[in-house]
Image 1 (tube, rainbow, N blue to C red):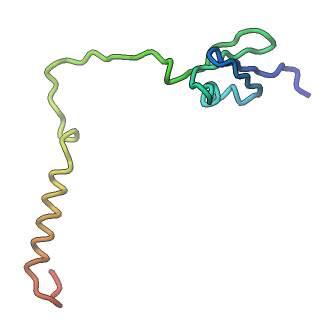
Image 2 (image 1 turned 180 degrees about the vertical axis):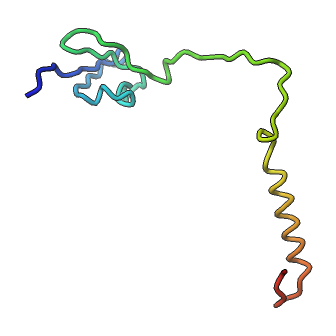
Image 3 (image 1 turned 135 degrees about the vertical axis):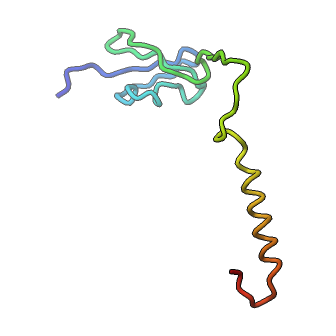
Length: 101
């Protein structure tokens, strides 16, 4: 039915073997035991090494030192807290049974 050979993944650290088409999906290209990227082969030929967050390179971005914050990046919690306290003060000014307007 299928002419292609099955994919095989071997963990370089612990030696665990995985066989199946699920190795095409990046989330199945890491070893569940130790977390390293699997060495994926097809018919004995090396295809590549799976991605693993534990063995990934670290990336650093150079940013300018004098960046101004945009209004969207400011802390939204302060405004919400003041709204909550003012609404609780308004409700405290009403007597029991009275509806706020």
